[in-house]
Length: 570
Ligand SMILES: Cc1cc2nc3c(=O)[nH]c(=O)nc-3n(C[C@H](O)[C@H](O)[C@H](O)COP(=O)(O)OP(=O)(O)OC[C@H]3O[C@@H](n4cnc5c(N)ncnc54)[C@H](O)[C@@H]3O)c2cc1C
View: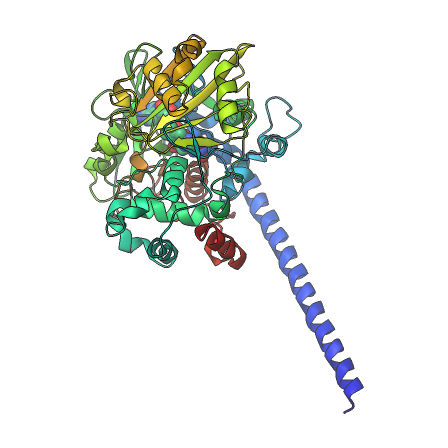
């Protein structure tokens, strides 16, 4: 055959293959759409009758579970009861408390929050209900990008080079190997134990940045370190500038949790605050919850569950025994287990082997405690000084970590105003200490024993502002220290059985949600973890045949790996 004919044949063949691929894709897409329609139609036909769902805990996980019930299962809102012991839902980041404004978090990422963005693209913004919360946050983040110029500082307010990760070759290799190491090989191990023969690893700029971004200590679980590494791989090349961070228009409580609450209220979900669930009864071979014991307004009550009723339990909370102080009073946490951990222990002890081991997470406060501080100032003096030092205007700088801090202190200056209740002329920033039991660098006391005023003095020391501290302290209206004895508890080293599955074996109507139930491959203490656990719980108990957005396998993306490699070799 002539060359020209071969050419024609090749072109025709390629065209046929391309057409076949397009036809197949179109066919698959149609099948998918049809399947989705069938699933939606089946769910639409469901009649739940008098069936009720009890959600214990009104944090992000509990609220998300209620949202999935109404949105994806057609479950009647008025038959869903959220039982929350606190005065308001959304424990985390509860906004303004009696002591004043306080804040505990701000971290959101575009990458690795698959179910979070999907859920919040269905929740209307409170400010402009025609757009979703996801859209509102993305718009805001686009016009208020983060580009940190002072990620790390020494003890005198000098900016350190955070682009240099400071690795030695053996450390780079060890990090790379993590991608190929199974979680089983790390069971019960701490990060410190894993890198025991490379003590220099804990002196690198990388460790300083990573631990403050995720709240790790060397005693935290190696499995969580690996998960953080794999889930946040896209951040690796931009750790110094924190460009991957997504800022919200207000604090997380007002930007995320309040719109979710409004969405649920509009669907008549019953939100009961001031109600503590103190115990559960379950019977039979299956774990079937039959009764809830409640404590409300000083009275004990019981709720009997009917056959087919559902129970979603937040089995543990990082806010357990959280305590706040003020400008002149330290925060002091209570002893022992509180409602979330206490209830989990009660029921886990009753059927050993099925509901995990709460003691693993709740027995070592030294390793699990984290401390937060929220500072409210009159006027802009202090924030102005911070801006002069860092080169960042409020909201653009991300975390600033003080490398030599004994408390492992970081601060963040958010976009102002950060709270809707914030008065005109007031400015707010916040910080956290990963080692509140250690002695400070300037204040010779553990952070957990310090008043808000003392913590602010320590911060001023690290910023190199000691000389004008009196003048600046006069502008500080309030400083609320908040001690979370179990703030890092989900990162405790553990074995596979310690965190129970979201739907435990033998469970007929019980699912566990939040940071203390096991969500495979996911990094606890992230909004995605809570939302994913809630979606898994709801879809499993109600047999919903819809997709839960899978964990994106960044480590299998060659471009991502190249970028990460570039970050490691800087
Ligand atoms: C300090 C801090 C900062 C964080 N910052 C971020 C961040 O910036 N970005 C991010 O993505 N993630 C962050 N997280 C992680 C994660 O998003 C939060 O931990 C999240 O709030 C957990 O949600 P949850 O519903 O599981 O638990 P929680 O928020 O702890 O809520 C549990 C709720 O259940 C209630 N409750 C518990 N037991 C009972 C009971 N028996 N009866 C009645 N009520 C009960 C509690 O009162 C509480 O309100 C942060 C976590 C902490 C601790």
